[in-house]
Amino acid sequence: MHWAQTPDPTGWDVSFQNKTLADDFRCTATGPITDIHLWVSWKGDSARWDLVNNIHLSIHADIPQEPPLVPYSRPLDPPLLQRDLGKTGWTVRSYGQPAPQGWYDPMPPVQVQLAEHQITWQINITDLPDPFIQQMDNIYWLDVRIDLSEPGAEIGWKTSGAPHFNDDAVWTEVPAGWNELRDPLEPTKSLDLAFVIVPEPATAVLWLAGGLGVAGLIRRRLRQRL
Image (cartoon, rainbow, N blue to C red; front, top):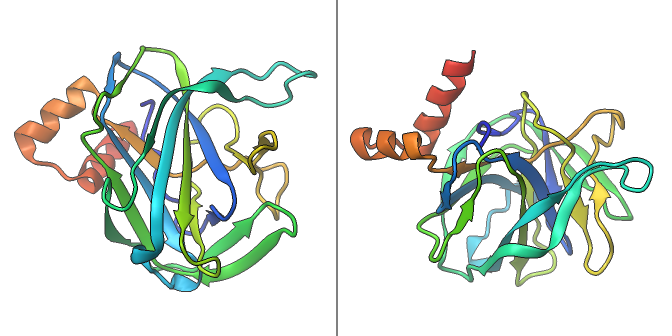
């Protein structure tokens, strides 16, 4: 992956309720996608992980932006890989980051709530069976949907901070088409989503040799880019 899209500590959480969210990334080394990590929060900090029925993810090729017919890029169907992880095909840990964060649901009626919650969580999806083999320099999309058993509960995918990659993230309410994701208070501002795909070949060596956790690896790679 081009770089880790880590959470914006004062950004938004985009609600998964009744929708799929997606963001694009560039492959920097050919190899299998075995591990995916993303950052989320619960609305009102009311974390209820027992309510998660399923996490669905898919990898897609890219439909590039070509105005005016394609005003923004989006995932190409059919998916190159898709998995339903159920209740047990993933783990979660508290990521901390206690700072006021906003809640955003772009689907009408639009919800925008400032300083709605504080706690960040990291979902870890590891050792994916029969992984998709990504090809160097290709752009792909990661799509995620989280299904909850209680309609009143909501979980959201955190937006990422700078640097941003390529085009905006997108959302869809099946079977509708993809919609561009923009900041609700600053419509000209692009929104990306917080995730990292590992390991790249060099990264895998670091993990095995040093026993680095995901958070430590991300901090190290970001420092190298500063």
